[in-house]
Image (tube, rainbow, N blue to C red):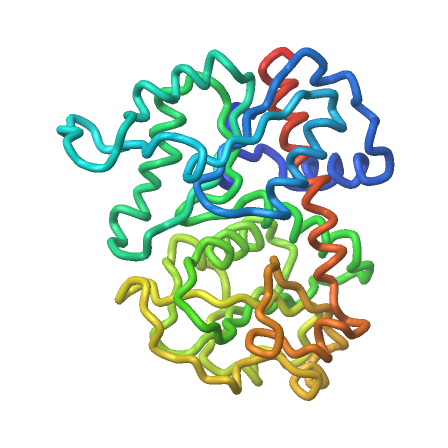
Length: 319
């Protein structure tokens, strides 16, 4: 593995899941693999689980880690090529990224879409510029369109909890929120579940909330949440803003919030969410605090997802 940006960087998802579960059973299985190596974690927006889980994962492999919050602690970066830098940006990524490539062996990068211009966000300009100019492996800690470490943890969570000899029914359902959110988590979950190929996969959302078809192709899509939830084994709850008319809120219908009454129509489904979650907006207290909630287990698996990815990169790059 030379980099980790999306499912396309993974040779075998089942092998990667098994590796993560091996690390969960024995966190220090490869405790010397990253000795003498350093990972930089660059954050252009806030993070808790991604930041901490990736640090722990790297340290479990013997790596040193340094966290840099670019916004409050660094210069404003410019990413466009051939730009006249007479505005608010101070340093070009062409100058910053190669220096970081000298400081670190692996670079984790978290960025966020502005939700203003679809073409700009979906070009993944920021992360691609770091890939182009840093000269070292880049790990996405969430990008403008995808959140692959979250999605790997999601597949791990389903894999370790579903023991029946059939395909689980997995439902990704839209939920209301107080503001417009990116499509990253929903895009990524759809991409990974489709690539996994082990689930009966359904996406439920209101009209006008269709995701980019490049990520959802292969899933059944419905505007009827009740129909989607019927006999579900897993329900993944997430808000996202509109994709076609980009970054808008068309619907904030509270009836889309998942409750125990809705959960009763499922096959005693396990409930998932990437966190942070707006309680009693996206998910009711009764569901989050109930026996069907996997959100804490899911978040815990972020460590093992990151550790599996980092070990693959270290091994590919000759330790």
